[in-house]
Image (tube, rainbow, N blue to C red; front, side, top):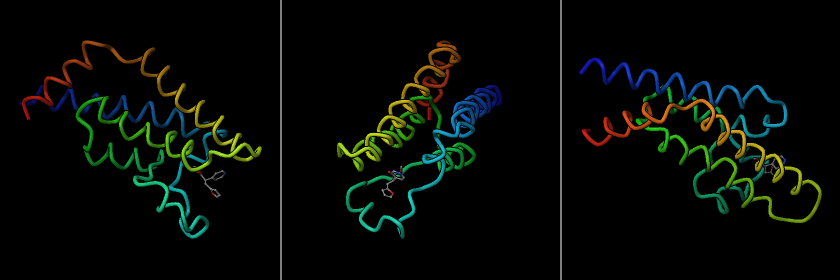
Length: 130
Ligand SMILES: COC(=O)[C@H](Cc1ccco1)c1ccncc1
């Protein structure tokens, strides 16, 4: 019914807010586009499901997410993939892992500070009826 579509529209606005707040940070630039497979030929052998901030935005616009939890499952791939693909102790790997951890904390804090729990529950209830 119409009110449900209003809730899901608000969810998309909230999720774009999370994603865009991260995309504007220079330290997260490396996460804003898919890893270039030409630059990193073995990437898809190591990482089963690549993810990046621009793909999150596309998914939001394509109404892929009905709850914040579904969005977080994809958002978490960004930093988990970075930790998995860049595990070494050399400075470059340490640097991208540090940024991956900062991205994880940024997402969690944005949601803790800005997401209304009742709104989140309403989205979960809509998902159950579909
Ligand atoms: C999310 O980005 C990555 O995981 C790539 C992996 C990568 C390794 C070599 C080229 O690219 C990355 C890019 C730049 N600096 C660190 C790592």
